[in-house]
Image (cartoon, rainbow, N blue to C red; front, top):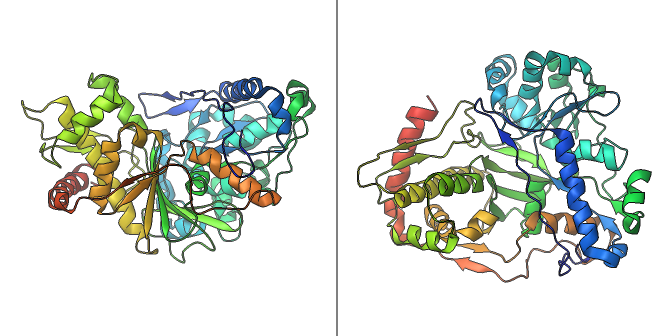
Length: 472
């Protein structure tokens, strides 16, 4: 629960973890009803925690992960699993899409490269792999649309959520008819795109009875979590980039205005809302990679101790190359068949060497994104966020040194939720509007120029193996 000035009300925050199933074949899915019940459980927990204070809530806002898709029937029941952003099983259809469509035209219209993350490949894959579910589907929804259908009685989608689908024209702000026709689906099978970006949604009678203290609350249509993160981190001008590592990772610039005339190859461009865009790149391995490293390399689950051990090793001194594609590759190469690898192992190599190499490899991927952003923008400041960077400030320093740029890590722990509150406050006229500065206590990181040569060598080695093993 937040004030209109996006300040967290003490004691009114809950965190319920969600785990999606990663299958051996590259799947990344969850039962849609299960995911929905998890959200309802989180709202129940928050409602109980807020007590009588819940009645003070005037408006509600939602951020949700981009790129998910679920089919529903005439009754709103799921006809498929909910397939999320790291789903790579549709990869077989990417080559077909690239062959039949002009990839650069598609990227410049929709802001999305042709990749298994997005709806076109997923819909073709569902058609082939789950024909009964495909035939029963009346609507294709993102998870936030599915949730809205249940709690608000309205399956409409927002400009922000639609822009992450790969079937949305960024400039016309409507579904892309060429891709819809190519997929052979009815445009009516896609959700209506809401033009009203002010909080106007209301709970159905069922949920008004369940949460009577907030029955009159008006809700803002869902915003993509990455867009909300930029707003919450105070990064919504062309000069400020947000670098985030949550489960995955991303580097983004959000601003008011139109998309670049030509979106750099390897990047994407989505919408915050009808007036603002966000451009950047995403990597699939971030905090999830950190968790994998700790679980599988049998290091103590002590972030402070691990941070110190990693920091004690010299830059790129391990002789290793780590390819961070355990969950596949997105930016910048978008290879649907990419997998992770560790090269250069010797008998003297230990688990800390591998962890350090993994951290550096993610930094090299961010450097590639950063350089492409600089083709169309002049970035003056980089703001970091995300639980993984808080758990390991050594990782933050490595990224800082690889980029050759100073960075700031604000004290805000939930930039996405703060961001949607700021957007809601702006759209309702409450609060003081968007603020470029996060007033919370921040940690400043200065890059170390003396590490640059070592990292340049390490990055060249990384690029050599990347080109030979991933881009082949």
